[in-house]
Picture 1 (tube, helix red, strand yellow):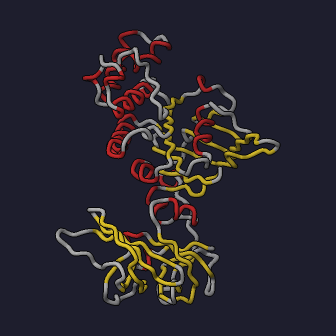
Picture 2: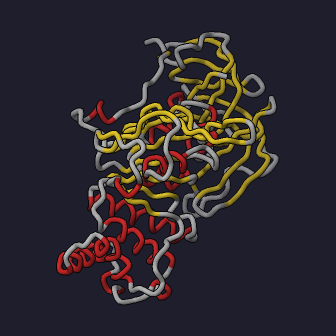
Picture 3: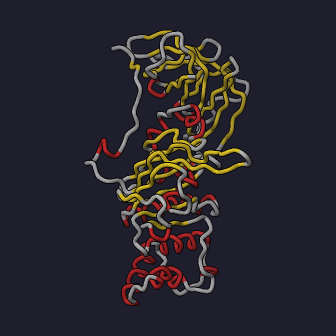
Amino acid sequence: MAPTNTTHPEAHPADTAPAQEPAIALEGVVKSFRSGAESVNAVNGVDLAIARGEFFSLLGPSGCGKTTTMRMIAGFEDPTRGVVRLDGRDVTGVPANHRDVNMVFQSYALFPHMSVADNVAFGLRRKGVPKPETARRVAEMLDLVELGHRARHRPSQLSGGQQQRVALARALVNQPGALLLDEPLGALDLKLRQSMQVELKRIQREVGITFVYVTHDQGEALTMSDRIAVMNDGAVEQLGTPSEIYERPASRFVADFIGTSNLLRGVVRGAGADVWTVEVGDGATALVAELPGTVTTGSHLHLTVRPEKVRIGTERPGGDVSRVPGTVTETVYTGAATHYQVDVGGGEAITVYQQNASGSAPVAVRGQKVWLSWHPQHSYALPT
């Protein structure tokens, strides 16, 4: 069987579910700002369709346009060009307070003089919701975020994670069509942030509301999202599920930005029965199961492989695997794993994550000659 040479379109909810109106749709959205005499596009032609009940993340570095995109969904910014739709309705130019969405920010903005229950009830009271209905919905929301026992406390008596959950309850109690979250966990410490990621996903699943989440934290997006839009320089670089984006990055930017990835320069040398052969480092052989459709023998490309997919040893590996010799230049013990940095020649280095089995000794030490190997399906090629 010949090796595969093809392109891979991104998954879309319509591929796996009956067609329905998306909860949120952006059509050719552009947002320009003046910078001196010039006009700069903070968002540059974004098209998105976010399904009802989906946990959708906008992921990217600072300045990539993700927060501006969310602010246009919320109605805090108007697009320079393009259309914003909520449940099929064109809301471009509609004020924020007339859109069926709520927003949660990194700063919780709780009223310090009010109790937790009164903070959550604030929006309902402004809408004139009857007192019995308000009390019922506030109690339900506080139970959902597991703070019913703190209803009479003031925000100053709560931890950062508890304050974030109050802000979430306050946004959800109004039963919006979608909830927009702009880096809401950024002010929390690492352990609490990780715990809140699990809580947010649980809450979203229970209420069934569309969540749109802005973050620059790759781990956060991978942990919680149904789908992720990776943004770069105002545009969507890749759209897909967490596993698609992690395992099959569409560009060098995505491969480098999402997690840790080894990015090697290579030259395609030929095709075997099931794999392509790519020369990397100082003439070492890497095997690739699939190549982009534009790549042929002699093409230069970048090969990416994740550190946890690579095996390290002192003996030359056998079988149909990539085989790359190198020298260990650094080892880092992290508890669960040991990280190895390996010089493979040609100005290239490969990072390896080796899980630490109980009582096992390090595979190699600094300065030691080693062999690296990985399966062809774990190599992913990107055109230069």
